[in-house]
Image (tube, rainbow, N blue to C red; front, side, top):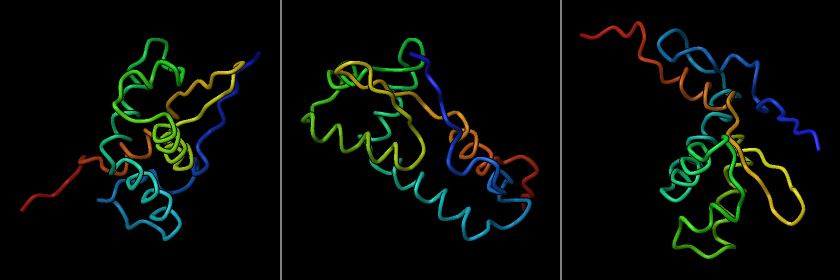
Length: 121
């Protein structure tokens, strides 16, 4: 089965311009706020980290669940929030679902918070 990883839903927008260069558009701010809101929960931040650091860059939900003291429905909910925010993508293989980081989303977050060219008083 060929694995196709679609680009982030907001890839190609002006959101990749650091805050110090120009203000965000309303659409970019809305997209980014969904990502930051998703990362505002400690369990979701850990889930993202578990997936990102897993061997091969992707993790089966069966591997993820063992790392948490949360019920399977709660883990599934958190993974869904991360997917809807564009931070994770997934693919069903048989009875298991495999997750991976969306690189474009990580780049957006990194770029927008870049401290390059900051002017300090």
